[in-house]
Length: 106
Image (cartoon, rainbow, N blue to C red; front, top):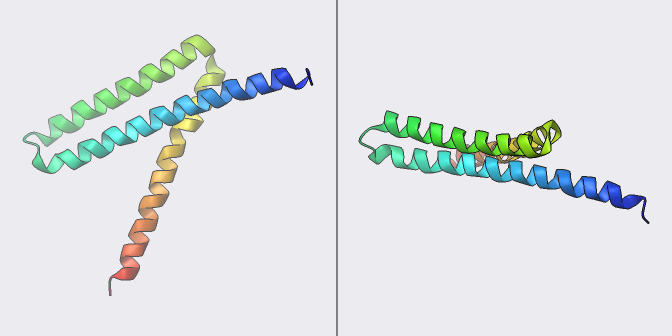
């Protein structure tokens, strides 16, 4: 019973790093979605895109930096895997929606 406790601790630790990466990835994509939705009514679309990009990158890099600073490079690698998962899920959903639209059109 006591032999499995260190393994469980490592699993929980790296699971939390993965979860932090998921949160960062979702926040990045949510910010992108908000920006794209505001583009048609923007007076300066290029400024909106650049500002959004720098804010999203700043948030993401600050999160990765904090994880690396306090937990090491293993945390960075695990969080990066979590960061890519929302993008993969969103890309698949968009591809499926586009495929349904093509089938529905005569």
